[in-house]
Image (tube, rainbow, N blue to C red; front, side, top):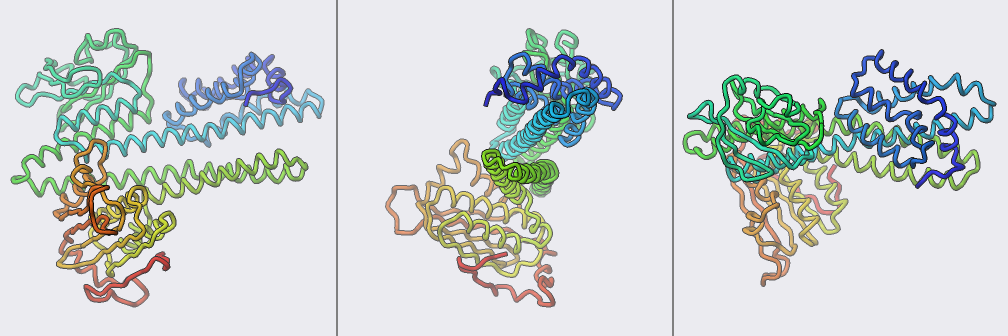
Length: 552
């Protein structure tokens, strides 16, 4: 909504803009003395109430200023400056203008302070949202990289998928990835490109290869020697060079070209370096898989490590969501409750209704954030084990699924970490798919122990689908991901379904069966006491929970 001419914020802007140049200089000096670097200083200076006053007094809209805040808020997040610290620093501008406010009449000064507080409040909301956007983009990129690993059918396919995902994250359409030659140390081969055909071999000197072992962010005119193909960088404003690490020398390099000058920021560099390390691990995994007869055990160890890395990333993201976005949303809700009470005391029903609606939106955002945190890293899985985590998962599934749900599970005890993670993630994916696609009215889930293995069966009476088509359809990675997780642990995976529209018996639906072997020491976990002084019942004894019983 555009700011009206008689709006207090506009009046405040016109009053402050006569002096804001002086305050801007004082504020920038304070930032430098506080240890902020030039990039952080520039971003913080564009988010102050003085910056807002200058834009509004010039006839710009408040939305224009908030867009500027959002852009610079994302830069601050990538500079690893938390939103709460940035908000506290922006308040220092209020302290600078305090003497000027004291020179005004009390009623006028009160209106000016209220307008300044309103501007700061809106700025903080946008600032926190910008930080959340950065974390959301990182989480989506990590998720895309995980799907790339599952969907890749070879080393070149993996590199093409990885490069496309990282190019989307960097917001550039021109990116190329090269691998160092095995037989020819000086020959580098173009393996993937987003802006043309991916073929060609290029000679790289040992000196240049040494330079490429570090992340580089440069203008092509200043460092043409750092580009594998010098002509490729012509006409660009910036180029980033990301090494794929090796034991003694880089195994490859990914280079990103930008039309304008665009310097990388610390958080971007961290994610890209982590992605490069993950890419190297994925390449090793594929090459080991191609020679499975000779290196089966190595492939399995690598797969387990990848699962641990993925779960560690999920926990990190969930902690970031809880510590940053979650706490900020709770703070916003508290402030809205205070403002709502103040509006009620002031007998302003219109303002109170607007604040109440905003508070309800914030509460829904808090619930959604909590749901995301629980889905990313279920605490019960690591604390209490697979059995408790499955009961919690089924209870949440019942909240969104209108049909009948039954869970049949043996007393599982604590199993090998990879087994617990794999079974939980597969059942989580099954529940999501059933809720979205199956149109089922009844679902049965069974988890039992037999023959030193965990056996899982998921049945529904939905419409079914063509499983062969689903495995080979581009962009569908759920079933392929489940199968790969199970096979890499030495298990078995099968699914029985029908194509929608074909003749079948009523309620036939889909049945998924997996078997995952337990390690030798996992069998002993069946005797661990899990509730009070009760021990686990003998293998094969189980209990059935119907759809009306909560599984907490």
